[in-house]
Image (cartoon, rainbow, N blue to C red):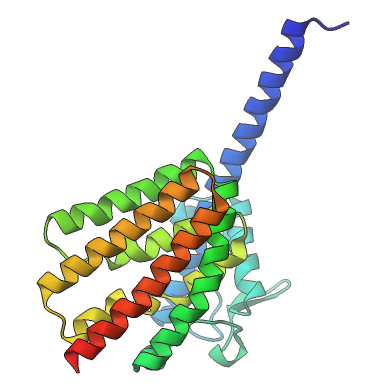
Length: 260
């Protein structure tokens, strides 16, 4: 019969093994995102054109310092989105834009206020659900990454800078990643940076001082979402995200109204 001490020790070993496995999954997911983003960027910049063969597994492994399994997972994602196709024995090729199933939004689609409002409306339920899941599934590593992004956002505002778009977008992507459901991350990342209302405030002719005040409100709302996720409170996380995006919609409407 096993002693109580032996049973406890075995339990700790199992938990440690599970934590190590979970950390490996997180690291692999992050590296996979890196490979996907690199290939998408090359396609959008025209470095890789429709019909072009993408670099081999070996070349991508060397270029991005990742493992073969990471490269294969990234290519699998791009295949699922019809961005690339693999011809056995030949290689993997970029598909034409007409063949792709993507929700990426061209800048022209964001040229009027109604389109932008519709995008935010779509995101309210989508990201509310992602935040609720993140509250139940987040790891300490997820929390560290989100907190780091919030700190960079706050530092920019303390320096009186409105250049926070990257941190704003990254905050939402990190929560989608913490949801544990890659489709939330895929949809948001495919929408691109232009979806963020932050890109439209300058075009609305808003004074920099007013932009700083608006962005302080955004940061406060981001912190409320983060704290709900820290507390592992799905209902509060969902409500905080929905409130944040609803407020973003109203801020944008008022900004354009003031500039009209």
